[in-house]
Image (cartoon, rainbow, N blue to C red; front, side):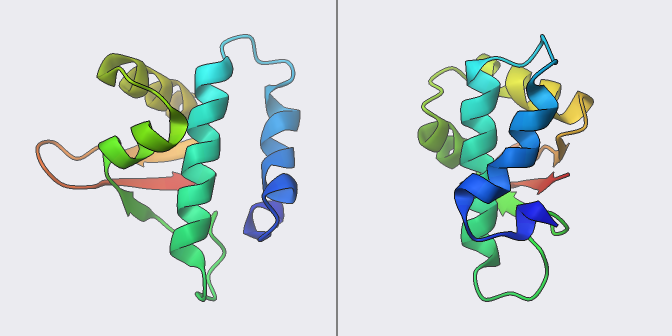
Length: 104
């Protein structure tokens, strides 16, 4: 599976192919997906399970910093769009704590 690759260019290629004809995906979504991908790859180092198959726990602030998103509404809207379109599975955490995220 391409997302299991440790090479970021190979891992992002399937996503880029899927979004070619998706008008609702913009630069914010791409930046967010890249931040999620690097976070997933960082969590999966040394683990046998492919990163696209495992949920990771990630804090909103960390992902926002990585993706250069400054507004919470922008972050939540982009996460919702990626989830709705089937690029990620997103289980938000209410209150303090890390949300569960999985790349699909």
